[in-house]
Amino acid sequence: MNIGDVSRASGLPAKTIRYYEDIDLVRPARGANGYRDFSDQDAHKLAFLRRARSLGFSIEECRVLLSLYEDRGRASADVKALATEHLDRIAEKIAELQALQATLETLVTRCHGDDRPDCPILDDLAGQMR
Amino acid sequence: MNIGDVSRASGLPAKTIRYYEDIDLVRPARGANGYRDFSDQDAHKLAFLRRARSLGFSIEECRVLLSLYEDRGRASADVKALATEHLDRIAEKIAELQALQATLETLVTRCHGDDRPDCPILDDLAGQMR
DNA sequence: ATAGGGCTTCCAGCCACTGGAAGGTCAAGG
DNA sequence: CCTTGACCTTCCAGTGGCTGGAAGCCCTAT
Image (cartoon, rainbow over all chains, first blue to last red; front, side, top):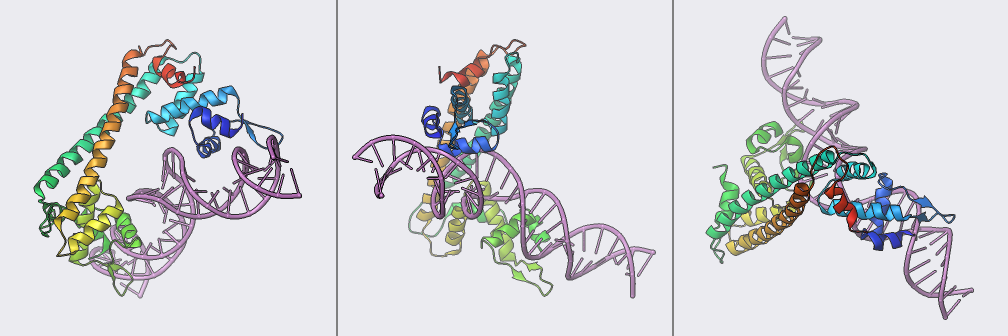
């Protein structure tokens, strides 16, 4: 399998796959012409990575997840711990964004938004000082 | 005012302030010794930037906000438009994260999380393929 | 033979900083 | 006057996770 094939199969851009090789997430074989030659396992691994990344796991977490995946005797508790940690970070991020949202919504509501220069949003941005 | 003073006053790290000068967000004067010499306006501007950044506006948006702030005749509608756009992006981001959260929560709940190797989370990550 | 697509490497850039090295400057204390 | 230590300067490199582009090789079809 050439990189284009495995790119279509996994849904990852070829550039990303090369990058993943660079950081040792995959280790495809090489053909006589110097082209990367991906096995089915490689393709599977890349699909795994794509899914894990799309769930928001960092590359380093993906590395751990992959090694757990490939360790036939792993404890599911290890995976669960990683996922739970990740969930906590997601919840935190959501809370942060909701706080921003609330603040901004208040400001936007208070701004009449017409041709006049008076603007509570700018006042707030500037206002912490005076 | 030296950079340390304005750093304490604005709440921004000195490194960040130097970076902001680099990208022309602030243009502090220079003393005879080569030290940056910040005016009260500079300090105010940096506090403005800090607040705008903390509300999640990008550097480029901050640049626009600053120029609007300094334009005495601006229309508040312009500011409101920028803030509303930003709100949309925040809402989008929150929705994305909530989708992730839901997926991950389902997976975590289904994983018993003990010493056994069987793990629905890994199954899901791998599973899109088979 | 040539045209096109795909493959290779390498370098640079994105965003918004952050860390660290190497060195100049200033105020206080001995 | 000298030293100490805090502060300041510039410059270079790195973060995460790619992404774009250039220059050049390879393969297949016409």
